[in-house]
Image 1 (tube, helix red, strand yellow):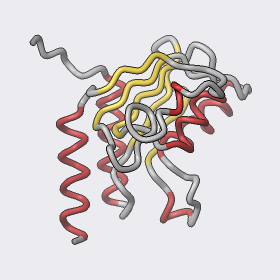
Image 2 (cartoon, one colour; image 1 turned 45 degrees about the vertical axis):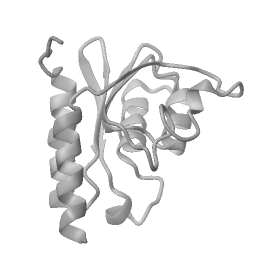
Image 3 (cartoon, one colour; image 1 turned 90 degrees about the vertical axis):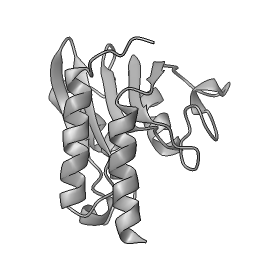
Length: 151
């Protein structure tokens, strides 16, 4: 199987995940892009902000919506290092993200290809195109390293 180079937004998401480690956060980074322009990015801030909703995806989506001046991120792509949870998958659907690219799958907390499979539910308002395994090795290594140090 051919191995493609990582897209720049996923490289940036991985760099953000590394910044999360330095901040004592779970290493997840996310970047929202439209027409090649980064509109919003972020990493997990749940511990820093004492906010259980401050996942990397939510942070990036909020910043992109502010940049666009619109709650609909139609035509935008989201790159994230870990499979989104149910909350984040719901936000992705509500924001009308066109394409989701994620690195490592999350059998315990993911809700895109694991668990609830939010986008497959009849009640889901919008279903983005989903591409998984983008930067999976790098993202998985960051996560394993982070959690092994805390055990």
